[in-house]
Length: 485
Image 1 (cartoon, rainbow, N blue to C red):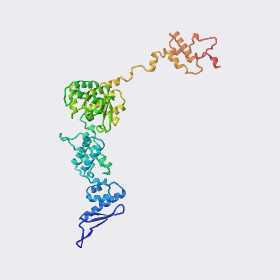
Image 2 (cartoon, rainbow, N blue to C red; image 1 turned 90 degrees about the vertical axis):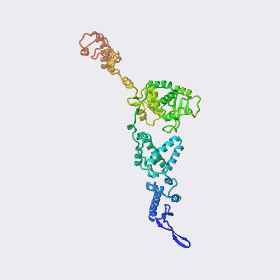
Image 3 (spheres, rainbow, N blue to C red; image 1 turned 120 degrees about the vertical axis):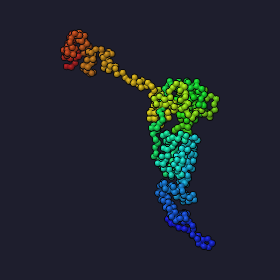
Image 4 (cartoon, one colour; image 1 turned 90 degrees about the horizontal axis):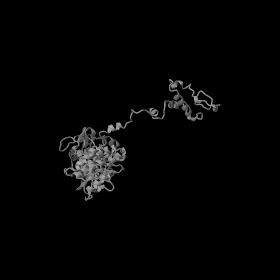
């Protein structure tokens, strides 16, 4: 590196330039000259950064934070020289833009993926609130994980002046992480400084747990709501149909808001949630009950395809609470609340109670994790524990061996004893031991007054056991001893 002031002639006189210049050999061994500052020390510092940039270019390593900050604050003319000489690619030069400019382009990239305008605006505003308004970052190299985490934890409601719930804080953090991932994918940053941050445990901060409605409660709710007057911007029939669709399909509140007439295939008994409106950003085609499809057909008759089906208010919990009270159904049972999202819990619980396979329940509920389906969205209805215990075997019944004796498999103690004494199969056996069993039965019948059958069984000799062609043996079962000579 060489630092010097170039000389020039003016009016026949040799003069010295007011600025210092730098001269290098770049990564291609080409001599390059860059304009510095009026201060030699400042020009020397600039030279050190350019030398570092050349070393990173030769080693093909991603730029560190110090170089990124240097590029962000570099004069645009000098930056163009870096790009021209190959020290900096045009995409990496984008680091010189302000954070606000990057966020605006990030919002456009969300729209380009097919997401809705509302989702793109919401994500942009959340990232902007944390990174610019709360943290005060100006360039993307300013982003620090610890500062972002503290800023997210300190977020408050604009109107309530109280801290956001853990779930809302996680939404803001995810928006910032999504923005940083986009910067890395677009090669505007080497890596994301927020990738290791984790959200808070929502279950530790949940305001209330939800419950599911049983079949009787759900029927009463639909019957009374259908006859109820117009309120919350919806007629009673419209509200009842909304509750019915939510409880049978498990569609979320914001997804229900997005449904239009064209979303329904009533002859095919299905409804489609578009990818832009679905929570997991995939198009979902969900089945409908035939009777529900018929009810929707009458409700949607004569409406244009682009018209929204339901005019859902902002506070759905208040609407459902009023209709539950009208139906005489308790809003809170055992500390669990029946708000609008409880209708989705009802879907999972009714499917589980109907004996539907758990994998099919997960598919209908559109959960990525089956543990979420089973642990949070399936509830036990009243009486199910008693029914489950009642389905256990009756332990007061006799055992299998006792039932065989009592039900006639062995008609007497003699049958049971002879079955134990008789050998199992073989050519030496006559009539499979039935002869010996019959003899034992005859002896027992003729000697019912004898003290003990077991005491005399080895000495008894039935009267009809003798024959002219037979020889008595010790074992009464052997009736043809000549076979063994």
